[in-house]
Image (cartoon, rainbow, N blue to C red; front, side, top):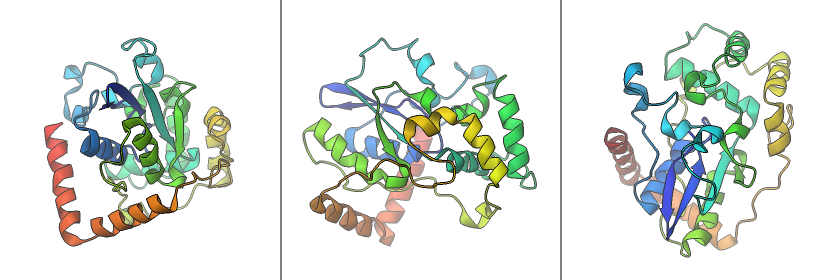
Length: 257
């Protein structure tokens, strides 16, 4: 989900929403803090194929396609969240099984992965770009955050762009996996080797090793004051009323967007 656009101050900020990298949570935060987003349509999948104007939802557009629509230097800043390619591929498979229902639960991850690796060469837009390499979604100068370090690290970066510390001090988690349904064997060594081959560019660019879950990049250095604010915000959001209100707001946004 690659390209929601937020207006921050007098400039436009481009969020390269890589599928299966916490994008809905980031989109929700941007909307709550800065208002309506451009280039987002969460109802795209519900449209009949003949009524869709593009091969993917607008928020899943790749960088090359975006360049055909927006001129160079159109955005004041750009950022993205990336994820270990193995975890991302496994999450894409779970999404196809649990949400899209496009894959039967009895199809092993290994078999699905090999089939997707074959088809994606013929159709790079497969499954709304969920299988496309992460590098395809962003320019070289895009600011990168790693999902393994948590999404809250994005907030101080946005503070600097906005020139204030408005909005929530922690990001809520949207689209959590159903852990009861998610139970499945972990990717095998052969699966990991295939993912390392398919996404070699992502491993190199974003500093991941196939057998190591955490990125090589150091975790962002957040101030004690911000960490305290984030902890307090997360504690408040865990209470029943705020949690229920947030859930209702998310459902309303899905209907309205």
